[in-house]
Image (cartoon, rainbow, N blue to C red; front, side, top):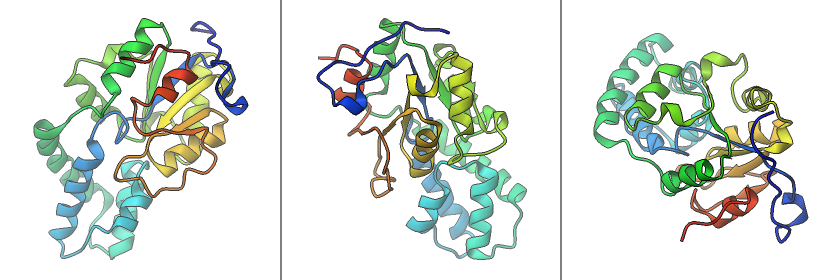
Length: 237
């Protein structure tokens, strides 16, 4: 087992008062503004085909790997294209947009620093592919800041199935109840809840209307003081 056992402060509600020893971050829309970028790409992909990228389709696609989300796009609009064809086109468009517009989400930099100062181990569990993760983290030199990274290639079942978070807890050598998970989407949050983790929903403008029923906490952002309190961290001034 890794990490130092950390008791949640006694003033938190009883349902939150459990020792948390590690943190797992989702990537897209939680750590970085990639959901904004995927929106731009999705709109362009469908506009080229005379179709609309609707809010409902976006909601159903969020938190899922490309193989599933692009098939949903094809099925929704009856597109004359394969997943592989859309994947190539999407990757080209995303690479151009990523280079110009990628940014960390509010509160991320401070939270990473606080976890490192307190020696709380952290990891990433994402539905994105490993090459995409390496591309995004590599732009900031952050690959070595995480104990491990789990991607779409590392699981059989994608979110909202709990496999990725059960796998993360096992990699940490912890029970799922000792792991705090940060997620921005309904699919991702449901995976964290089903795994039995301390699931923290951090909705963005893309997921503000998602259903986060069952989450241990719905935070305003990664800077929310309640995240720090749950982990026994000092809140940044």
